[in-house]
Image (cartoon, rainbow, N blue to C red; front, side, top):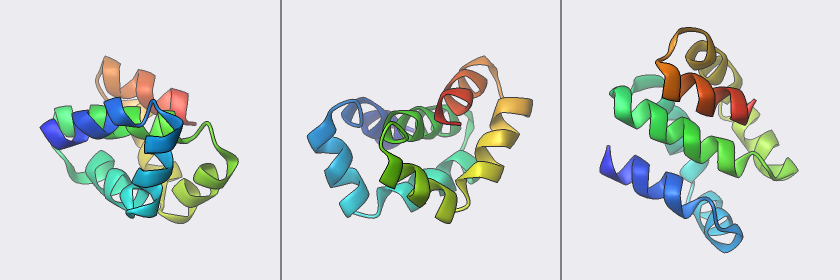
Length: 89
């Protein structure tokens, strides 16, 4: 949960966004948004929201299966998950 929260915070910075993506972070974040605990899901969706400001990252989120996961969180998640997932979409 702490790692997902740290990635969420770090992903607010453009240089960090690039580093997260280069390290394969989008796939990990999509996995956490799908399979993590409640806090991990919320933080992963928040990081994906931040990363989705970039068109290339949007394509990578789609390629990683993120749309289905984010739609599910936006529909069925807790309030924080819903807000973050909707922002990513």
